[in-house]
Image 1 (cartoon, helix red, strand yellow):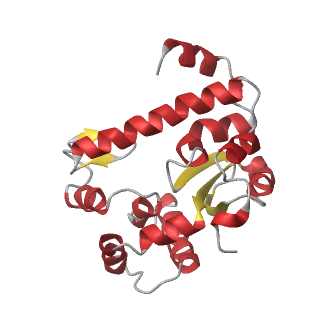
Image 2 (cartoon, rainbow, N blue to C red):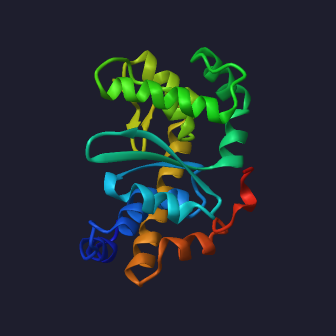
Length: 205
């Protein structure tokens, strides 16, 4: 991150919902990623749902604690297409999601994630696939128990290092770009309009 961008970021009010969304979800907002996690104060629940209601970005509540809430934000058609790819589909089947439609997968993962967060179950590695991580890296993470990665970026890399570095660089560029946009007064809706995520035309409702 350049010094200019860092200075801009430090000048942002990170308590504001739109700033939190911009900082956490820049790759999604700029069309570089099919999904992102968003964790915010629970009081923002309705505002998040309202913000994305008429957009191509869908919201699913993965977990709620007493004061925080975690959403999976995703572009439905793109995520469904990714989950249908051969390697991802096979791995999802190994996770027990054979033939499941997206809504059932999300429900199953949210239940497992809730159990994990409450100390009652293992981490659901399906989340990695829902976030668009390469299946090889999800498998590598499981087999190595999260240890000995080739590289740590937006996820732990166990294969195709150079390709992942390029992806991470793209995400970094997206973050810098979005920081400049919100610093200049653009809203999340403005950014989604710029990257054609402002309507439901990309998703099956």
